[in-house]
Image (tube, rainbow, N blue to C red):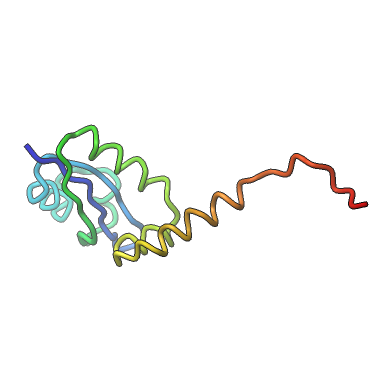
Length: 106
């Protein structure tokens, strides 16, 4: 059985990221608003990215990882711009590093 992580672009220009074991059915539910929740109030929605995984665990891990990404990184994923995704990840790591040394220069 296959599992999918996917991303939808919503009418309000936000992204929704989820995972499922039946991509076609789940997307149809989002498109019609049948699921309620986040996407039902932001119709129409468009599938902009999906990836297949061998287990629910891996699809869920991808969903959680992508949900933590910036908008720029999500756009790079949609475009398949792997070098940009990597660069954005490096920039994020650089921003998060705190200095442990003193500010003095001698």
